[in-house]
Image 1: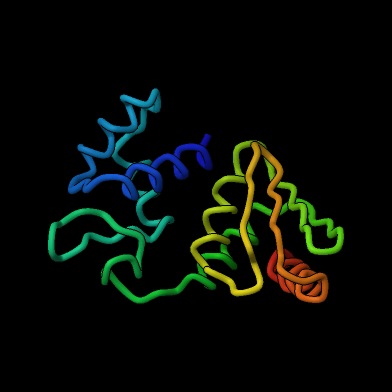
Image 2: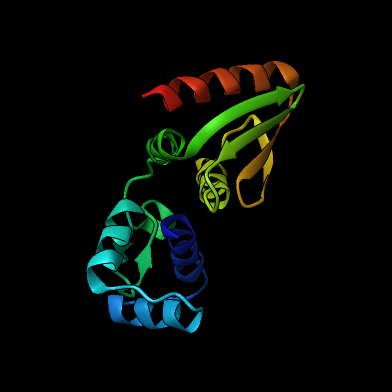
Length: 150
């Protein structure tokens, strides 16, 4: 449920200017997710959301000047938390997660904007990462495996 909720939070703040936790809580409730203020605060912290000075809306750090870009750090954390297994077939990398976590990991990979990654496709507990070359896919898997062990 946490991964689904956090994915929904990222989707909501990416689509509209949300300026308060109460506004975010109401948007979540409208989507069928009831959350306490304490849980929402933890989610905001874990997702590293920050308020943008210009409009006061929540943003992911690095988006629209809202803070330093640290996509690799966020990706490392997501890999360590969500990856349960990795399998490579040439340029395709299949990553297994617990139910509901593949989308969050896919968002982290997409936001990292890795030059070797062409794109991701997420299911519930499986993420497909398309890498541009087999050699780069092998190195990508090695890196992910190292981060997952931490």
